[in-house]
Image 1 (cartoon, rainbow, N blue to C red):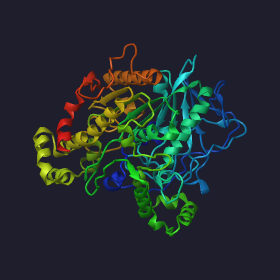
Image 2: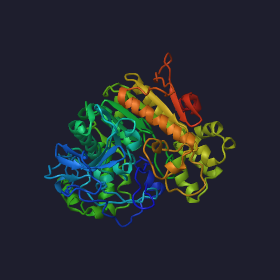
Image 3: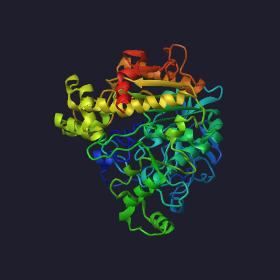
Image 4: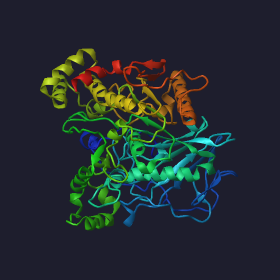
Length: 557
């Protein structure tokens, strides 16, 4: 997630489990760095490269951006006040208005985070609730707006995603920072918004878009919210959150985990299983908070005193607790923001009725197996495979799974295990999500299937990652690590994908001149469970259920 000079622009995140990085790779502590200017800093002098037309008035004050070719780019615009001091672990509040013209030519601060092996970036800056806007060329009418929510939930930021490729298709692209890890998910008894502060930040950003899109040439009545991984799961939360009603009109979810469960050991040895991948009850969130903050010297029988103590601690002190950011890569439910378990709400049709474009990659779980074993020089053996199967499925079912996924059918036991968990966890959850949504709204399902997609993450080793988790995102956002590696066929795939996404944002259906036909997904015996395969060599329907052996897994379960 970093480039060769500074935090890599347009990075893609790779995980969303509560304990994935805790067990897989940890969260190595490095010197935190100031990631950018304070979010309330205003520079009245015109920045280099600014030209007439790059100044826009928002509801908090004017901002001046830069021009990149035919695009205007505005960075680091505050959409909410700094969540620090008594506002740490509190609902977001409006940004403080400023006087003069605010410099919007550089990214704002990242929210607090610590480095990881795949994202060696860090920040201790809480004044980080900012967003970035990229406008399309030749704006003659109000353009559809696409709001991007990045994934992971413990590292990352909106400025890592370069929106010019999608803006070229006629969209106003907005990318967002939100509170991560413990700063977004802490929970204490009686704390308003406990376990959902990151989700509330995203909602505040969507409210900002509704109020300010027109100033950037965008249509506030045509907003698509899109995200990957943890960000896609957040969108499932917004679909079921009463307070998010009316803030968006379409949704795109890439590699989301809204309806996934997690077998024991699926994310590595010692990682327990969970009935839901990203959703926790309020009590579970409070238990996570108690465990992760116990070493900070703020233990008190009265939650209000515990909260006051935690709010008084420096950010750096909190970040020094091992794994405290990764442990909160989940959302709490049973509260005002998420009154109901989102999978239940989706299944029963209690969600906001908007068209959905949703999908996953063909080899989702290869990322996690590769990170755990081969990429770090620890081969995954036949014995490891047997142990993993028994842990995940029990003695009785392990043999049946091994017979369905024999190592003789794969180049290595690691790829056999990755295929089994891709199908059992990711594909099964993705199909369940598509089926639930499609009972009530138009759903366009896809599978990203480019098994030669460039590996842009800094992972070593000779592991075959295939169409790995989030491999599709550089085909939508410009990425200086992946772009030079694209073949002509991959560039054509990228053009088709951005065409699909832009058409969906514009009309609610991925259809347009020159785009291969893409039918809606219709579940049920009399329906058409349609999934569009996206690969350089072929774009068209795929039998997703058969390819991922979902009948086997549904029968086994």
